Image 1 (cartoon, chains in turn red, yellow):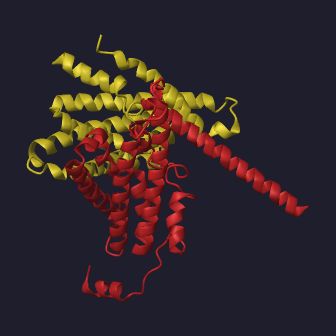
Image 2 (image 1 turned 60 degrees about the vertical axis):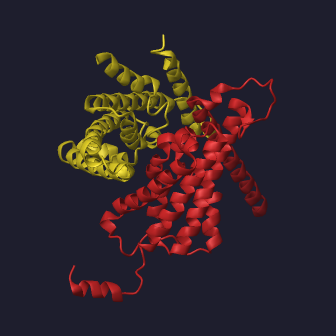
Image 3 (image 1 turned 90 degrees about the horizontal axis):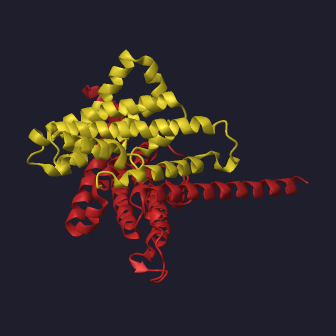
Length: 232
Length: 192
């Protein structure tokens, strides 16, 4: 790149990024990830960790916290560096930034809660390939101001944690009869071990999607009925 | 030696099947399994990348990352991304039809959790080169098996009369649950 080119780039006003999300108030950026655009329930991203480690509430909370940390910091940094990162190599750069924060999260977890780190095993380093984080970087953080990227990352991270924790509660309560290790149904409950094994993960997730679909259809039907009523 | 290798192979293929027991590579498992042909071809591409990764990671672990184990995650993902890029270029050049069929799922092999999982597990278990390659073959064929089975079920599902509500992800996940249950049957293997 020649000196002239550098100057023109620096003097140019902020370019309109193609495909950038339309401006919204910050709380909408935050709320979208939790409800309307939930990464797991609506976008169906990050399914692997959601099913793989959701057999205990403790694991779910640890995994949710680690993912939230990585998502928030990588989104913030990607947004701060968005004008420096060349478009051609942006994905590789995003992956490197994400991998750095995942390494930090992994080492911190190994140091301060070795037991949790051992249970989660390779699934902590595997946050690198969690589609939610790269998806947010590509669709949102790389194109907006740091404040918006931060709120969006917080919302998406909390939305992921909520969906994950819900899965964990269903599976742990039914599968081992406990909640965070405390017995729920008393000593006479025969644990439904199927739920904490891999097929239970697929089944819980499938039933959850069926319930979501049913709820969506019902809402649509109600809306249609209202519209018909208005038209009459 | 042979017993050890065959144990690694079969336990990864059936017992700890990457997709059905460890929930790895679910994006492509649900994404491309609508047609049988694409299913097994993606499985083959994945197997190839897995074997290449196993070799590359073994080289990295033996010579490059000896004193800096904390750089593993970063180094692995960079190596995997470059490998997938090379495979993509090779397929584009020599097998253009397959390239068109796989579409977006070919570059997405990079973010396939199975590949990074293999690299990490191979490191923690301290496999040597042959063990690592056998492990990768077992994992890759296991993926292919799961993809092919799922694709064949979903081809039949297209003409079946199921409630409209269940036509999307819900039903596919419940089918995956049944398949996973069937694979749990292998759990007693090797102990008896």
